[in-house]
Image (cartoon, rainbow, N blue to C red; front, side, top):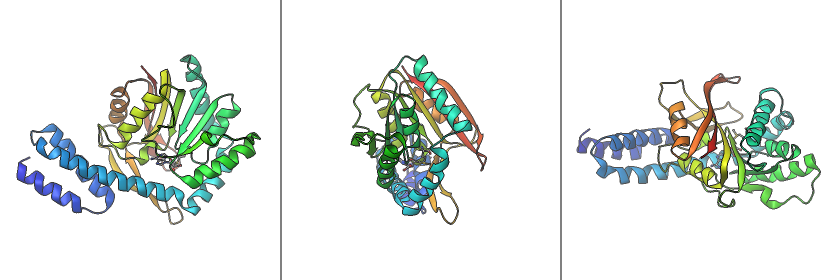
Amino acid sequence: MNTSTIADLLKNAKQAKPLEERFNILRQLLYDTEADRYQDYEPGIRHEIKIVSNEIETEVKKYYEQTKIVEGYLKMGERVRAPSGWEVKNLNKLVQLIKENNVTESILDVGCGYGHDVIWFEQHGFEAFGLDISEPLIRKARILYETDTGITDNDISRFIAGSMTDMHQFDDESLGCVKMDASLYHLPYYGKDSPVDLTIRETHRILEDGGVIYLRVHSVADGEKGFMELEQRGEDLNSRYGQNLTSEEVKYLLESNGFEIIEQVNKRQGKRQRYWCSAYARKI
Ligand SMILES: C[S@@+](CC[C@H](N)C(=O)[O-])C[C@H]1O[C@@H](n2cnc3c(N)ncnc32)[C@H](O)[C@@H]1O
């Protein structure tokens, strides 16, 4: 790629629409500049992609704060609050991994929604916390927690409203497990220092040595490229942004941030049969 081409591409990328298209072009440019010798453009591209990433995070927050989404999740909650089948198998697998790794029985559910899994872990003897970007979902989680557990002196710090990119509310090495099921993929990924990378770095900081991380993200078939998309969810539920990470990206993300993979699976799942990548790893 020659210098004039990359300058033009950067100019065009800034004007590209819609938002996910702008992000995908900038991400490709960033990867191209990292790979070739026109690195003078890298700071400019990084600056631009950070702006777009913040816009995407704001849109996701707005999406999960809409009344119809919050209410919709609660209707689903009648089912999920008593997890069964695949869900409960997965939660039990996490319990087993936490015990095998001899870490504290404490867990943070990142992107906890209305806190159904936080409640499940509390009911199974864990000290459990939930963090979510949606303030109304966190408010609902606090109420449901009291209803389901009967604990009325609910500590306000059990459910935290905030972004997973900054988990300053938790001390270094203070938890045995961090779980992020279908939440990390709402953040943009463009390698080092992207919001996804910052989140995994933060997770490493707050986990004890040997602590377990579990994540499940939107993926693509092995060999394809990951990308950001605006996922359509039908008339009632609008659309929301999601990042498709490849198995290789998930592996790199975890290993470059000080984790050792225990198990990683990339396969089609659910009613829509889309690709999901799940990974269990331990802090080394
Ligand atoms: C698809 S829902 C999954 C909820 C829950 N983990 C489950 O499996 O049922 C995604 C959740 O991630 C939350 N979320 C999205 N972006 C976030 C961010 N940057 N920081 C914290 N939570 C976020 C949303 O508000 C939403 O509750």
